[in-house]
Length: 78
Image 1 (cartoon, rainbow, N blue to C red):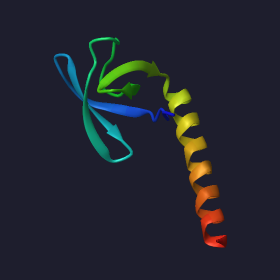
Image 2 (image 1 turned 90 degrees about the horizontal axis):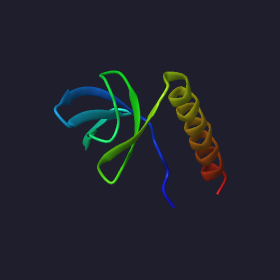
Image 3 (image 1 turned 30 degrees about the vertical axis):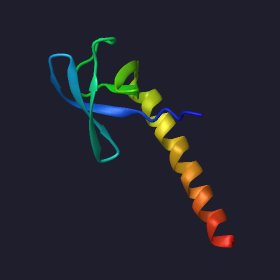
Image 4 (image 1 turned 45 degrees about the vertical axis):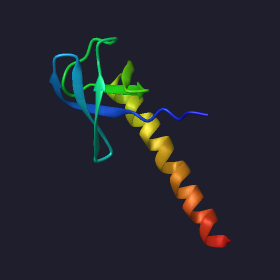
C-alpha cells in the first residue's frame, strides 16, 4: 500500500526539482508534469506524477494531521 503525501516544490533545475515534504527535502524528476516553484506535487518512485492545487494539498495534509493525532491518542491508551 502506498500513501501519497503532498510536497511543495522549492527549486527547479532542468528536469529535477527539490521538494519539501513537511521539512524533509527530496529531489525528484519533474519531466512528467508541468510545474513551477510553489506548486504541490505527488511523488512516486522518484518522479512527480501529479500536481495538486494548494487547496487540495492543504486538505490532504489536514487529514494526515487528524489521522496522526488519532494514532497518537490511541497509542497513549495502550
